[in-house]
Length: 385
Image 1 (cartoon, helix red, strand yellow):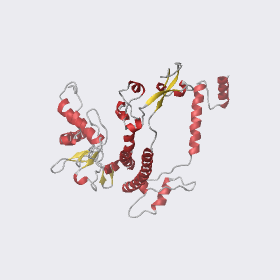
Image 2 (cartoon, rainbow, N blue to C red):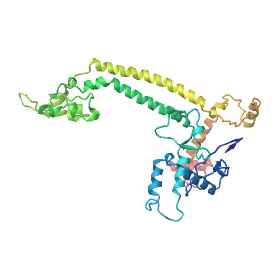
Image 3 (cartoon, helix red, strand yellow):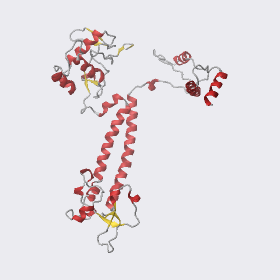
Image 4 (cartoon, rainbow, N blue to C red):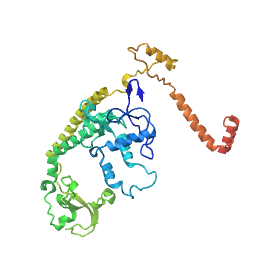
């Protein structure tokens, strides 16, 4: 794509059976010294030459691990890459995948303000490399737009919040895992082992949680199974130990652990207060970051004019172009004019008309002329009989 004196250099994504036999918008030219490539239309042969050059030029430290493994150990395996006529060139296919499909950034002097400037898909005139999964800085995500950048910043801020909140709740976790909360259960006592246990008996993810392991069976004559339908293991029928009459009664499990202490309430309120402050600060930061990056990125809305109250008969784009052209200076010009008609209600009714007409055609005989009102009414009356 050529605009004025600027030239967009890229190999767009048009792969073929041989890896990329149909690449467009790129060409091969000979320059003194190394082979250079420019951004005009190419033939399939020239596209193959571009990919062949990229495949040979790429070093191992600039390749993905999958590509290195395939090229070293699998290309000569007949079960993986059968030797047959007109088989694809996997090296060029991998070069196409890494230089066109995967995002890359310029290296060396092509970076801007120490940021990793994203290269166009198929860039082959300047040196590029893949984004590193670990070493790519946070500010590089702005190359994908403000939304992507703010998403990853939000995830990072959420991780910090969860870590600090966990640290604030350490006293509560220590309390819930202590004998003070569970009441000193003797795990060697058979009677206790039937209904309770210790924190050591809990799964790792539940240790130091508020789960009570100190319980006992008590009589509850007024309880029913419906009251415990969400946890039927805490309800049973039996004879309570020490009962004088020995009659069967309804038994339920009661927790004997200590209730919430002031220290636990304080940690909960401290966590809530920290959450409110942190969310407020992060919201302000994200809003400011979004505005700053939006000003750094030029989009169509930055140099467009939206007229919300045009005259009712001003629907000619050429007329609008001539009107705005009188305000241009220094060789600038009106690039594009779009006139949007305020006909939402008309379009909605047209959609309803076509929808109802389609339903009608599916229910009446196929030879009915729906443009004939009398014939249509007769067909409808016959259908509804």
